[in-house]
Image (cartoon, rainbow, N blue to C red; front, top):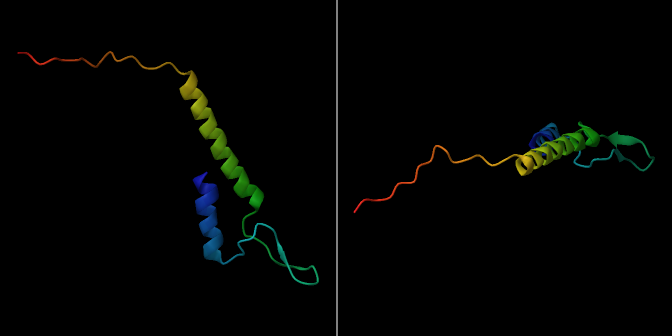
Length: 78
């Protein structure tokens, strides 16, 4: 998700390309500027990140909790 939002957004900013996700046209309808990276590619990276986070959440929900075998509880002696 960070790659699709932050990194590709910074690439768009530093290259001086337009910030609009759609091509910019003039009065005659000619395309004067297009984004460097397609919005479909950026959306794909963000959706892939959401899928990975969703799969991780499902794994954590289904996976059994670890037992505390190595933890010993000590009490103070009087």
